[in-house]
Length: 114
Length: 112
Image (cartoon, rainbow over all chains, first blue to last red; front, side, top):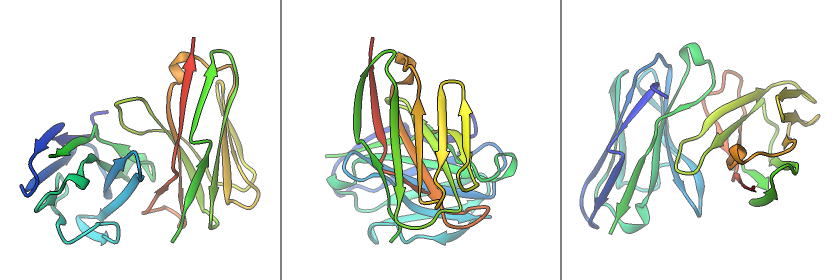
């Protein structure tokens, strides 16, 4: 799907390091979501934005996590400092525009914290 | 908080056998969506159900939304190896939903 571009696709880092994950929506949208996927907890909604404004960040696990959306074409999810339990696949997804209320996911960023 | 559970967690079937996954919500949903995630891939939208008791079909896949709008099911007839993956339901509380809660998923393995 070309609707959402995520980078990096894979990242391996050491505990304590800062991690920045990036999301670039290509197609039109009204909403942008960050999900985290692990074997233990499945797909968890971390935060979502509507027209670049954060609407609900109740899923953000700790203050170490932060997300921004400076414009409609870019969002970041930052973890500082990272911990091994943050290891997961992080998905960015968009909703709205031609896709109405259907989620279009990016390919995900697989994070491993050693 | 709202929870969406799916059963079974895993299902192994022989190619040609049928498969069903069930989705149950602790609260009434305004609509339910189904997604498929291939191994190593990302969730991909399959279908959306909105009306109470609604049934939709996509070739060998049949989707149903319960009368009380708290449960849903996905049935695959005569599975094929291409059906392998994890199937997620996702529900929302509001119309034109801005927040989808995903179910726990059912991983399907199909043996040739």
